[in-house]
Every structure is written in structure tokens, then in C-alpha cells.
Image (tube, rainbow, N blue to C red; front, side, top):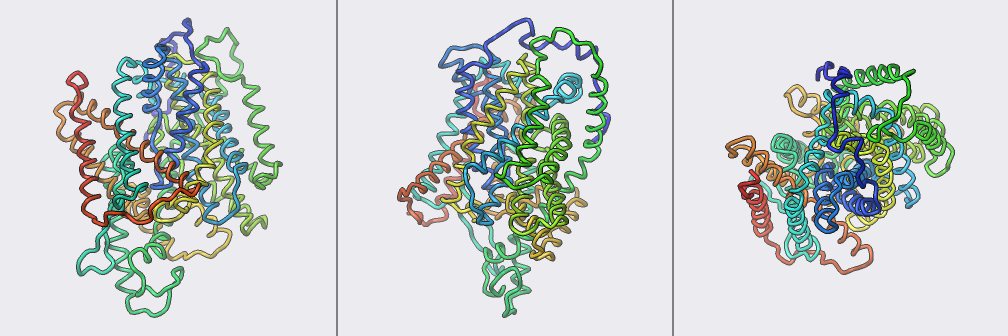
Length: 636
């Protein structure tokens, strides 16, 4: 990444920019209708992303689907034609997405430790992290969004602005999301609700002991693969194949003659099947690979990190002493005194309120890493987008440093591990929210939104989603159990392993180091070590359907004659894929609610055949292809 990309833009260019709705014009914006719809979508997409993060350790952007849905509802049903209302709705929705990501990447570790949890703890963590993310981004808006408008593209924010500006097409686009939601929900309900067929298919390889390949026939994974594309999906599958048809058979071969258990497994290798070896050994190798892959991602971002801090401080100094003129509507942020007071109040609350017990050390760490990493995240997403922001690496770095400080000060044991995790969870949530609010403010800058109204809307979305995310996590744990093959919670499990390793010293470090060495080797191969490492950590059954979605995307790109056709087809497929993800995720949460309240859910699939679910999944992939390529000629 070239540091030149962070050079401040020319003020003359900045002054020439006129938003879609100019400052002189006022439209309905932070209305009751927009807020109510935004709250609903924030909760819905927060739940969907929480489910997805627990399944595969990935989340997807909600801004464009939210913009499309809001236009369909506000314009189609309520006959309201304010683009700024739609902007408020998508801003609040991305708050739910960010809260879901920040929570599921860290907090499920508490379930894995069997720590008593309650709603108050979850709400406290996500609200403090979410508010810090918004408050710390506010002073950066003038520098990153306004002064560097021509330099930092903020890809998701710019794309969402274009969707909002072409709002007359929102109704047709919303139909694609609605159809995808219905299809994904029905598939999930029939498979995992009524158990008419299996949703996990696997088979061994003849004369190849404990070598297994499989596929989870789930719509959400197909949709994720389509959205992330074949390259990322292929590297993730490569990690899965490395684990399941290389490492597991190797461990099985060399351990076949042993009669004693080798730590951390409790049974001899000769008695373990593929799943037993995965649970006893591969997960630790994968954890080491993910940890080092995340840190490598962070190290590769160091030029951007230092450039970000330098330019941020330069911009702050340049802004001092400037005369204050009448501020246009499109330049009004939340007043600085409220921002500074809010940050100080939150840090003091974290330090002294005995909800989390992180102490002054934890609060100081949150203040330092919060300011440092929020500045970095807000700038980096402006270049590479939210999906490529090294949030995991920054969270891992925070966790490792805080646990080392706690250990040095004698704060160890379970209390020390939980406190370190809480600090990491607050930072992770702040980073996720700051990245998303940066994209939203870019959208607002282009369409002519009022910044302070967007910032308030983001905080309302944080409160709405944060108030229910704990309920969702508890329901999911009761239904599927955190850490199980059905709900591996990969990134939270990694946080647990790292905290235990630093404070407890009871980890199989050889396995961790093997994973770390694999990640380093992958970097020399020119691969994305973090993506491959996630594939190693998760069962190959998860990576396979993601690759199927990647194949569909590849063939869309390959056989589209022009860039315009390819872009139109990709957009249609992305909307349908987003619907698949949302539909399965919401039905998954609904199934968890039914299980929680004791509703009878069949334990075994009525149809034992592996072929039927596989064929149904291929039909679903074919439907995704059909929806993508069979749009109206006017669409392409």
C-alpha cells in the first residue's frame, strides 16, 4: 500500500464538491418513521450477522441491502421520497451489523469458559464500545471524509450513495432480497427445523484413513461465497482441505500405533476418528495460524497505521485557530464538548463501575487502543473497505498486550482472563462501529446528509441492536452450544485460547507454533494467511459451500461479455445472496428461540440420504446463477 494515498486533498477540490442534496435544501431526515424502520432493520441485520459470525467467523455488509429495503418501504409503502430518510435507515442498520460483529468475535468466549453471563454485562460491553466508536470518529470526519474526499474512496459508502441516488430502482432490487430471504428461510426451516433432510453431508476417501470431505448445505454459506468471490473462497477451502485431507490423515498415520493419549486429546490417536483429531489437535493448529495471520495482517497495515496517525495529527493542528463561520447544515457534527465529555464519561464508567471489573488498567488500555485503532480503522476502511479492515489483528494485539499487563500486575486466573476479554470486546466493538460509521458518513457526505443526525442515528442503532444481542447469544448457546461443530464461534474461541495461553500457560504450544509456522509459510506463497487459517480452523464442511458460491460468482464474471453486464449481474446476485443470508440467519435464530422455550424439534433427519440435500443445494446454486443472469435487458 502506498503512503501517497494518504496525502491531504487540495482545498480547492474540496470546496467544489456539491452533494446530491445541497446544504441550502432541507428534506425530512431523522424522522420517527426512519428511526422506527432503522431500529427494526438494525435488530434484524444484527441478529443475522451474529448468526453468521458464530457459524463461519465472517460477517457481511448490511448497508446496501438496508438502503434497498428502506427505499422499497419508505417510497413504495409510505410514498415518502426523501433520500435523506433512506440514508438514516441504512446508517442505523449498519450499527446493528457492527454490533453483531464486535460481539460474536469476542463474547462467546465467556460461554466457552462457562462463566455466568447476564444481559447487563453484554449490554454494558457493546454499548460502551459502540458509543466510543461513534464519539472517537466524530473529530475525524472533517479530515477523513471532507478534506480527503478525492483521496479516500470508502468503497461501501460510495456504492451505497450510488444506490440511494438511483432510488427509483429500489423496488425491483428489494424484490430480489425478499425472494432470497424467503428461499433461504424455507431451506433452513425444512432442513434444520423440521429435519426433513440432513444439512451436513460428508464422506470418507477410500483407502485413505480419516481423510474426510463434506459440505454444509446451507443457503447463507452459498451467499457468503458469492459475495466474497472465488479467490477468497478458494483460499478458505484450501485451508480446509489442508486440514482434513492432509493434516488429519498425517496425525492419524503417525499416531496409529500409540496406546497413550497425547495432550490435549484424552484418547489415543488410534481411537480417534477425523472429528476427534480435529477437535483434539487441528483446532489448536488453526488457532495458531489465525492468530499469526491476524498479526501479519496488522503488520502489513503498519505503513497505513503510521500514515494515518501522522495525517490525523497534522489535520488537527491545521484546524486550530481557524475562524468560525456559520456552519452549513451538511457540516454540523455533534458538538465537540459533548464528544469529549462522552468519551471521558465512558472511560470513567468502565474504570469504576463493577460490571466488568477491568479496573483502571483496562480503562486506560481502552482509551489508548481505542484512540489509536479507531483512527487507523477509520482511515484504512476508506481505502480497502470494511471487509478488509484488520479488525481481528488489532483486537488480537489488544488482547495479548492487556493480558501481559494483567499478568505482570498479578491479575491472573479466570478473573484476569475475563477482564482481558472484556477489554478486547469493547475495543473490537468500537473498531467495527467506527469503520461502519465512517462508510455511512461518506454516504451522507455524497448525498447531502446532516452529519450530527447520522451520528445520533448510529447511536440509536447501537442501543437497539446492543439491547438484544445478548439475548441472541444466549438463545444460540442454548440451542446449538458455543464451540460445537454447529456453532464453532471461531474468532471468539481464538480469543479464549490466547487469553488462556498467556495467563494460564496450559496450552499445547507445539500445536500453536505449528499453526503459526503454517501462516508464515502461506505468506511466502503469496496467499492471504488469515483467510487460509480460518479455513484450517473451521471444518471443511463450512468452506465447501462457500466455494460453491465462489464458483457461481466466477462463472458470472467469466461469461459476461461486457463490464456493464458483469456489474449488473453481480449486483443482482449480491442482493439475492444477501437475502439468502438474512433468511437463513433469521430462521436459525427463530429455531433457537423455539428450542429455548421447549418446542419439540426432531433430533434426526427423516431422510438419511446424502444425495438429496446435495442435489437440493446444487439446485439452490443454480437458482442463484439464474437470478443473476436472467435480469431484464434494461438491468444490463
